[in-house]
Length: 312
Length: 199
Image 1 (cartoon, helix red, strand yellow):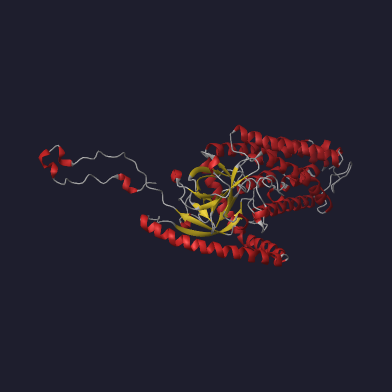
Image 2: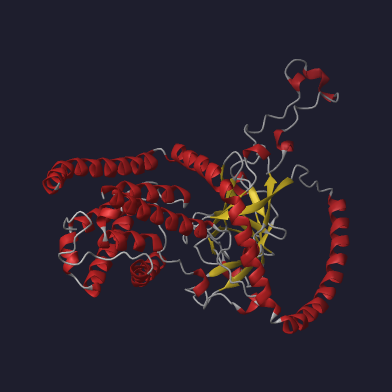
């Protein structure tokens, strides 16, 4: 018996070495293939997640709920303090509400005067957050709506208040939202009231950085940041947050969306914007060369200008 | 007798897989605050000072790596390499890491430990700990170096260093749990298994 095992080991050792080598090569190969043809492997990854994570849902939901319950319970301890705080805030809010109502009416009047047409195609699908990215370096969540519900890559996602991120990766039943705080997230924004354009770039902290600002001196902490349709990715005019200045003189954004409690997220269906492809045509009456005598007549209108199609 | 050894091995492998699945499951749970503290008085958490490392936003230590290394040091025969690679690959896929890279590094690291089994057996815990710290550092650095070579965007250096420190700190805990609860120890010199073979 004893000799048997020795022999076994002598026999097994080289085979084992080959096996390990094969495994290592396989892993390296997968990594290289992923680096070369990322979309296909990512598709595979999305398919796996699409299959695996929903099957955990029955277990995840109760645990997540339980923890949320415990959190809530803990906050009962400070209930009086909170109550006072809320009352105070409520008082302030009343004043703001009054102001907002007045502004809304005024805004409606002005819009009416300007005959502005808001984009009527902005509808949304709402999904429930199913899972976290699991990695400390990735800020993303998994929603339970997917290609089945018509979700596409690149659509904007918001919670009730403001922009939360965008769709990156769509499975049949799930889709992944890259949050604004992720390092891979870069979103064009407009800063009001100065109207400057900038990029909002996530850096894994709670407050993403504003980059590529033309004149940072014009910005003030507290300025509103809203999304912009530069590059044709996002619908314009969604609230993102407000500017804050950090001690190292960098401008960051406090996001309005409540990242502490992402539960229901709204995916905005955005249609690809119409592009203006051709340059302007020559404006000239058609008959000009044929019979110059009829020039005085109201000639046929020039072909409708493409610039009517939309100026985005 | 042989069956008994096989059963024990099967037991440990399934224990490993179960623990690993539990950890992955916990990491996937949608509890995260996504970078913003749960505090109701969010106004107090002014940026600038708090953007650095608040406890809430610290990356959690990689317990699974600790578990793998601790077990391979103790009983290399109880944790076959294909199981390690397979699990880490699945984790790569689920946690959005570059697929295959971390699995490869963990495989190489654990194989390196496996070849040093005889040497490690002679070490006490603290020496072993130092050895493992060195290995982990090499693994983390290799990971970063590989990502840099293929020009992938990386996690900030500070954050991954904090994760490394956390993982180092978690190693003794994992070893203690394995030792006292799962009964996984280094075989003593001259210890024999049920067949009378040297372990």
